[in-house]
Image (cartoon, rainbow, N blue to C red; front, top):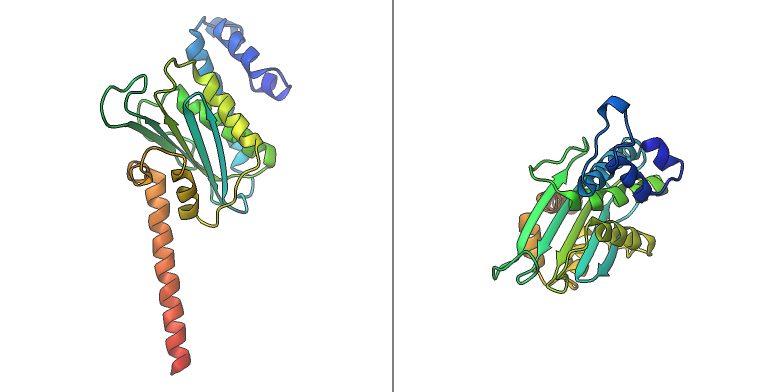
Length: 234
């Protein structure tokens, strides 16, 4: 499969071959539902790319990519750190799967080892992760990536994971903005979301960890500055 992909064979052609049981060892080949084959291909090719991406240097600055398609808003924050990835998916009230008055939020993430941490990872996670890894492989960099997807009632008829994958690919083809800090990036993201960014942060594992680390470093910097000024005055 990886050989076909690296040779320029269409991703969608590979998923059809996989679904028809035409890939792998003959005695282990099986017909599988198209949805399963798509998720499997995203996962397998993503893992192959990750093996190479983890050897690349980190991105040199914070990058923010965004896209919107039929009621789906995507925000992708790339941070200059070792590879880790988190998807925060928000289904707003009255969207196709949510009848409650509060948004439904699902989160999954992985650290440098590339293993997702929470059970129940779905095709949407891999449909975002794979094009993110494609981009990092293309630019020969690694990063910590926070992907936020907000789904509104406008998305009344889900069309499958292809729109997730292609929306993210389109976002990554556009020039990013370059916020000065993670906090600035989140402020920028918050302007396009209906969900309060504080709710997003409270549900996220990586954002809480990163913001907590940033606050500690800021405190230590202030302490060093204060002590330095005190020693000069003496």
